[in-house]
Image 1 (cartoon, rainbow, N blue to C red):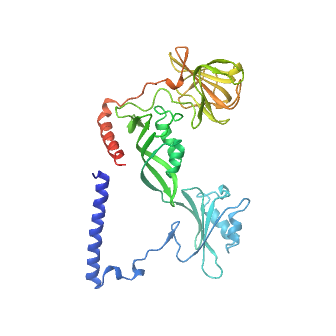
Image 2: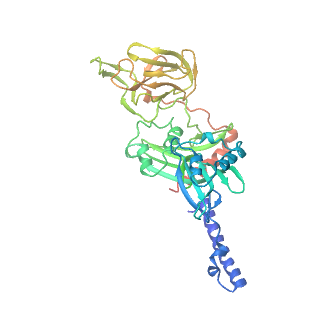
Image 3: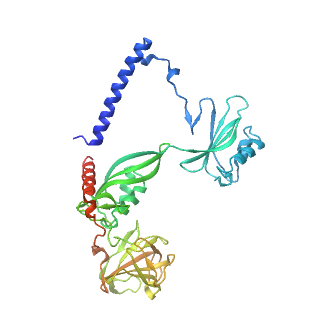
Length: 412
């Protein structure tokens, strides 16, 4: 079955084919020869490089070496110091040459005669912006923005070991891992992925010179975890784009599934665990996430910090009360986040500290604890309620978005 997008593509191809046939007939009638025998130089367009017709130049690529200046490069290719100085003065408001960075690329456009003087130098300041130094009749610098191509991609994969390895094996951009992790952070435990879990995603990816700049807008996604499939449908509500499940519930929950990204669970909640330092069995009312020292630790929900200090075996610890029911604690930190002190308010996702090994600890990890009505509970068992469901006023738009997303996801 053809989707609307595929029908449009097919129609475009048909129209293009008809146009070409008509053009060939017209040209044959006017010139007496088929259009494919026209002189090539009549149809040939100039080759543009950074917006400059480059056919008549010799191009020399290079990069800025440490402690080397553009003036040195230009002087070696026939441009006088006076010309360089005048070009800089004429365009001081366009580009500050003091911001040139070592390691960045440049291209020289040189005459093809024996002198091979530089007529243009193009300095690539960042992935999207270049500065063109002109040494012709006019001496100036102009900004050139590279063309950004945005491509809609359909990607899917099955987990063998991790989401990261699955996406890299499929040739997908690494930033897509973070995008999916953020969308499904409240519904999928990315530390508990199993072989056979799968995902689908429709997204926009930007390219410059065939090089990917990363992932942009997500148009829809699905994640199947432990046999349960969750669909992410985007909807702009209250001037903010949010993702909802098929029932119109926000995928954003009151609490994040985990307080840090891309680590592993090294020890789970237990009523009797052998302590590696004390050498005795005692309850472990938390989940240990093994991660390198300095890994950011995030508040899993909005709340107020009720303690932030060093507490015996817990080491450096932050404790947050979220409401009248829930409290969380973050133990063995190496240091606290900016603005973290008793009485401070934090938002979901704020960095409240960094992974360490303070207190009774055999290595760097985060001991994360969850309390309900003052009693410890297994953090991995918490089912946080949804927030911000689709409003009545937006129901019709949401249903339309949902139909489109489900239809597209079913095509691959």
